[in-house]
Image 1: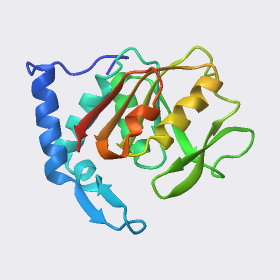
Image 2: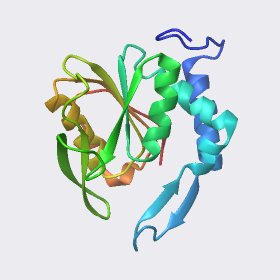
Image 3: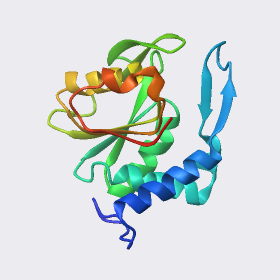
Length: 190
């Protein structure tokens, strides 16, 4: 598939969103008190394992920023999304890794999440990010720290966040309010 070319369908954007959201709602498994007490974990593994569901998610996310020239997926389920969307758009993909998983030099950002704190890293050399338009992807937006830290990493490297997108957003945790001035799209909001 050539760069920035998606399969054309006769479905409207609203119809695609509704179809994709139905698949996500139907296949998402919820786990209470995981990974720690009080946390309700959204497991999207069944969505990604379903061929129709995965294809619908990838197609929808790719449409969020067709002008992006680089896709970034946040560790770990974002890697699956990032690779699929990059293939659909004909771009490269960068894996935004958890701290300590990349050899130096790295750019690093610490952040807080619903059940603790962590750090994200991207390579500090080897990839010219200056002036790139990045589509930033993650599976779930909860408190928003992960996505915000990833966006800060790319901005610090001279890139622009073309848009950010997630499969599922948990409204009650307020993660949207921690994001920057880039467009943020979620397939399902609960």
